[in-house]
Length: 79
Image (cartoon, rainbow, N blue to C red):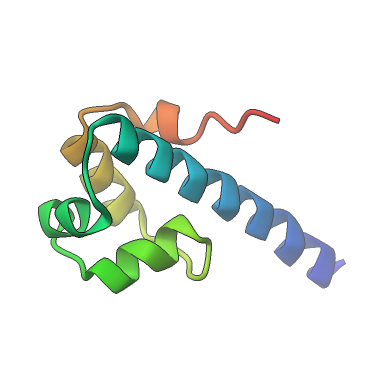
């Protein structure tokens, strides 16, 4: 059960990362520009977008502010 839960969360992180990348590109921003606006490294931003790491809500809220979108948009996981 523990492994199944991790996989389920990983899929959610992937969806979150895809949404971040989508809205970032829609705004015409590079990963570096968004990372700078959020005060994290470009490498960290890349890892967030590719679900290679967990991301704090503080960073999620900062990303929302930088992209001028609501958190609901980032968590709208379409299938």
